Length: 299
Image 1 (cartoon, one colour):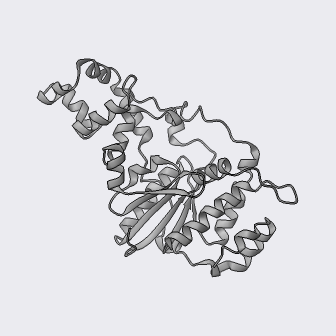
Image 2: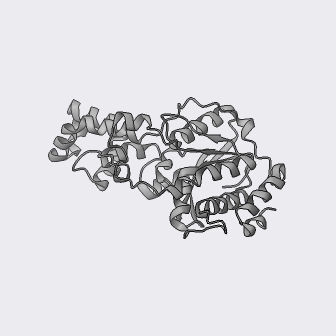
Image 3: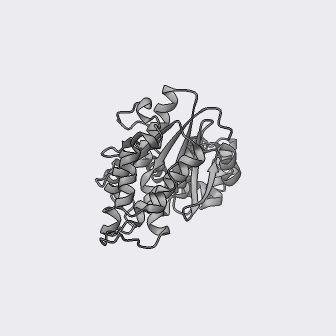
C-alpha cells in the first residue's frame, strides 16, 4: 500500500486485549497491580502509530451486556471461557490511556465491536471518499469488510507478527471475495462463536458452492427453481441444503457484520493529534504503571 490517501486506523480493542493477555506473562507493578494487558495493548498501539502514521484513529470496544445476536440466539459464543477478573480490571485502564492519547472510544449497547467497526468504515468512507481505512485486529471475521479502500492488519501470533489483507490476498487465501466470506461462513459455520452453519457441509464444499453460485441467496434460488445449473450439485448435498435452509440464513444473519449501529460519529473528532497533544499526562501515566521502556518509544 502506498500512502497517497488519508489513513484511518480503527482498533478492534477487545481482540487486541485478548491477544495481549495470552501473549504476555502476568506482569505486576510494585503495588501488586496486574498490568500485562495494558502493557501489551500499548506496545501494539505505539507500533501501529509508528508503522502507519495515521491521519485519523478510533477504538471500538465490546460492552459486557448482551448483543442483538445473544438475544436472537442464546447459545451465541456460549463455549467461550470466561476470562478472570484481572483481565477485565485492565480494560478501564486501557480506556484511560486512549483518552489521554485523544483517541475516541466507540461502544454501543446491543452491538459488538465488529458492528461498530463496520459502521465506522461505512460512515468514514461516506464522509470522505479519499480515506484509506485499516482495521487493526486479531480476528479474521473482519476480512468481510475489506474493499478497495478498507484493509485489515491482522496479528498472526504474538504481538509483532502481522499480515495485511486486501481484496487480492483474501481471494488468494479463500478463493472468494471478502463479501462472499459471509455466505461461506453461513454454510460452514463458526465453531469459535458456536454458529452451526449447515450441518454436514464442510469447508471445501462451502467454498465450492459459493464460488459456483456467488451467494447463499443465489444458491438456494438455483436449487429451488431446479434449473440446469442446479444439476452441478450432488443430490445428497442438495438434500442437506434444503433440510437446513433456515439454519443457513440464520447463520448468515449472525456472521454478517452490521454497518448501521446508531453511533455519534464525526470524522474530524477522530483526527490523530500526535503525542505532543497530551504528552505530560501520558508520561505521568506510563510512570505510574512503571512502563519506563514505553516512555522511550514516544517520539
